[in-house]
Length: 65
Image 1 (spheres, rainbow, N blue to C red):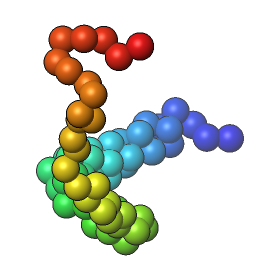
Image 2: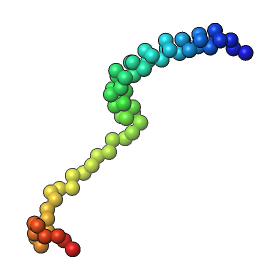
Image 3: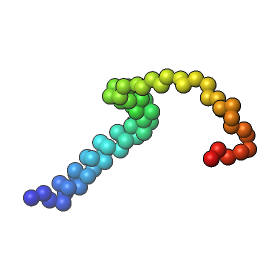
Image 4: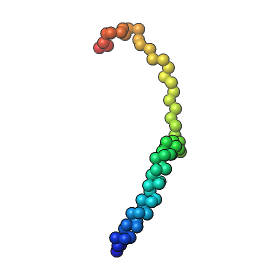
């Protein structure tokens, strides 16, 4: 069974390990997110639909029912 001193040593070890890693991750978060997105998700290209135009029968100010 683990003693209290062993548990405290594990807590201190994890704190010494994960606090700097968390700081670095926060600092480089945008770069990491962009790299992961480019590695695992394929970019999707959207074709332009052209110019949206109203029909000649629709006039401004009248509701289309």
